[in-house]
Image 1 (spheres, rainbow, N blue to C red):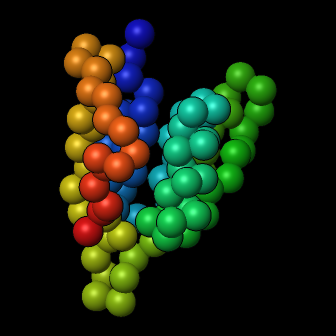
Image 2 (cartoon, rainbow, N blue to C red):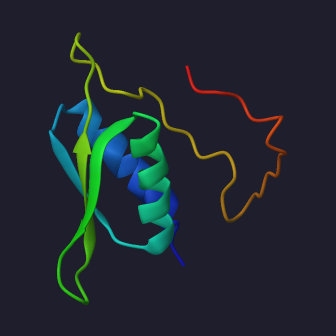
Amino acid sequence: MSDIIGQALVSTANALAVRKTTAKIPYSRINHEIFKVLERHGFIARVERAGKKEKKYLDITLKYSDDRSGAFRKVRRLSRPGKRIYAGYRELKWPR
């Protein structure tokens, strides 16, 4: 089983690095919910589901600041399938 969340975050970070306007990532409910949260907090401009039944994907519209830098610079997945890290909501740090 592959790490679909990590793949989606890395694909988005790579698209930001080469200054693309959109990124396409494979659809899953968890990816859709994660990117809706990122949209709500202003890290991406828009997320929408697209495609047919078997070939669904998320179309992510990326957001850049006035100095043409991406909305987020560094992406790291701390908790992954091989190494789970748990934290309470009070222990989580806000992004810079």
